[in-house]
Amino acid sequence: MEKEENFSDWFDKVLLEASIVDGRYPVKGFTVYRGWGYRIVRGICCMLEERLEEKGHEPMLFPVVIPEETFEKEAEHIKGFASEVFWITRGGDTELPRKLLLRPTSETAIYPLFKIWIRSHADLPMKMHQTCTIYRYETKATRHLFRAREFLWNEAHTAHASEEEAERQVLEGAGIYSEMYQRLGLSYILLRRPDFDKFHGAVYSIAFDAWNPDGKANQIGTVHNLGDKFAKAFEITYENENGDQQLVYQTCYGFGVGRVLAGIIAQHGDDHGLVLPPEVAPLQVVIVPIPYKGYEESLKAYCTDLLQSLQKAGIRSTLDDSDKMRPGEKFYHWEMLGVPLRLEVGPREMERRTSTLVRRDTLKRTSVLSAELIPCIQALLNELTENLQRRSKETLEHSIREAQTLEDVRTGLDERRMVKVNWCGDENCALQIKEEIGGEIRGYRFDINEEPKGPCIVCGRKAEKIVYVSRTY
Image (cartoon, rainbow, N blue to C red; front, side, top):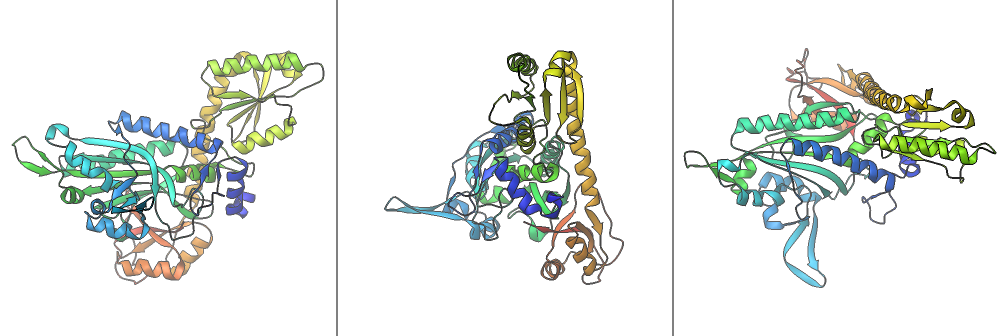
C-alpha cells in the first residue's frame, strides 16, 4: 500500500490534493491552512471549546506579545524556552524601550493577570482556556502539522486553593482530552514524562502519544501539574477563610490542533485519501447524480429533494451536480476529501425511490429506500465512527513490542513500532538509547501500573519503570 510503503510522500500528497494546508508560504515553518483543512480544524476546536466550557473553563484571548521581564520571572521556564523565542525589538524605525517576544506558550502572559483577578477563596477555582497561535523557533526539521514554528492549539490554565484540588484538575483535563480523542477515533498511550523531559516549570507532565504509520510518536496533547512554582514567581495568592494569604496551586494543558489533524489523517486515511470522523467532517454526505440522457431534469429534482431532507435532519450534506467532472472523477475527489458517505443516484434509483450509499471507511455499497434514508445514514455514521475507533486501537496494540536488549529496541524501531523497555531512571541511560539507537524514552504509563520484571536494558541495574521508546518528530 502507498501509505504503508512511503508515509511521508503519501501524507504530503493528501495535504495537497485534499486542500488541507499549503506549505509554500515564503517563511520556513509557517503553514497556510486551506479551506477544507481549516473547516476540519474549526470543527475540532468547536468540539473541544464546548467541552471545556461545560467543565467551567471561561474562554479568553490574551495578546500574542509578552514583555521580556515578565517572561523571565520563572527561572526554569525561561531556561527551557529561551532558545526557541522570537524576539520583537523594533517598532518601525524605533528601538523598543523593552524587548517583547511572541508567546512560545502563555503561562507568563496569563499569570500576571491571575495575580490581579484572584483575591479570595471565593475566586477559586479559576479555569480559563484560549485557542490561539504559538510561536517557537524550531531548530529541528519542520514538518507540516507535526512540527512548525507557528502552530494552532488550545491551552487551558487553572488555579486552585489546594494541592489536592490541582491534582484532581489534572485528571479532569486528561479526561476531557481522552474523550475528545475517543470521539475522533484516535488511539494513543498516556505517559508520564521523565523529569528530564517534563514541561519547563512543572512538577510533572503527562502526554498523549498517538501512533503514526511511520513509527514516530505524535504528541497530540499534554497536561501539567504546576504545583505552586508559578504562583511563587508571580505572587498569585488568595485570602483563605481564616484571613490568611496562601499561594494557589496551578495546572495547565495544551491540545495541539495541527497534530490532532495530522493524527486523523495518518491513523484513518488510506490510499484513496482522507477518511474523516463524521463529527468533524465538514460534509457528512455528498450526493452524486449518475446522469442519463433524457433524465437530467427529473434526476436533479429528485436529488434536490433528497438534499433538502438530509439538511432538514441536520446532516451536513451537499449535491455535486456539476458538469465539470464525470461521476468517476467525482468519486475520486470526494474520497480524497474523506467525506464519510457518498449517495449515488441514477435513473434506476430514482424510479425505484432508492439510493446507493457508499461508506468511505470500507467502500461498502448499500441500497436504501428513500423513506428509510435518514435513519440509515445516521446509523451508518455511528458505525463508521465505531469502526475508526476499533481499527485505530487494534493498530496501536500491534504497534507496541517489548525489548530485552538494545538490539531488540533497534529492531522494533526499524519495524516502525513503539518499544517497551525496563529502565533504571538514570538520564544517562536514556541518553545512551537516544545516541546509539535514535529513539527517545517517552515516559511510563500514567493510566495503568506496569511493574518491571528485569534489569535496566542499558546498564543492567535494578529497573524502576517500564518505559516506552520511539522515534519522534
